[in-house]
Image 1 (cartoon, rainbow, N blue to C red):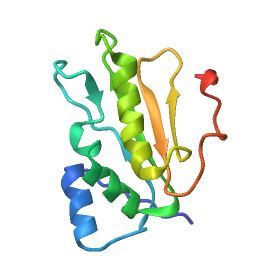
Image 2: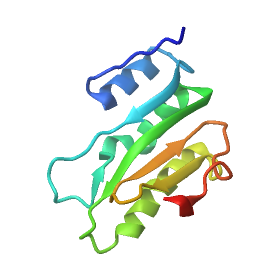
Image 3: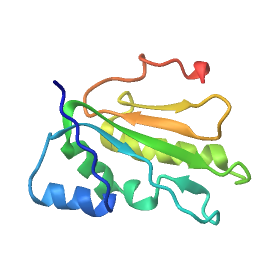
Length: 132
């Protein structure tokens, strides 16, 4: 019977604490749906602490080799450089996880996208971005 655990708390603090405790390779999946409530930032989701190198490296350490981190990505449609900001979010992750180990997938009929990254699983051939 599979075990699952849902942790609801300050995510940035939680991942830092887990890495400090040397808990590595303990998660099959980490789902990040952390967004800003104000509309003054171009990237509403994910929040900046999860896009900084320290946070990305921590996610990679906490995942099992075949694990995945899954982000809700939302950049405001009105933002003049929406594609550029989405590219920045993707590139921040590919610098840590590798260019073939991350995939940004559009969600049909929504502004959100899903970003999936893995320490070792190559995701580029797993999804067809045109399916949206």
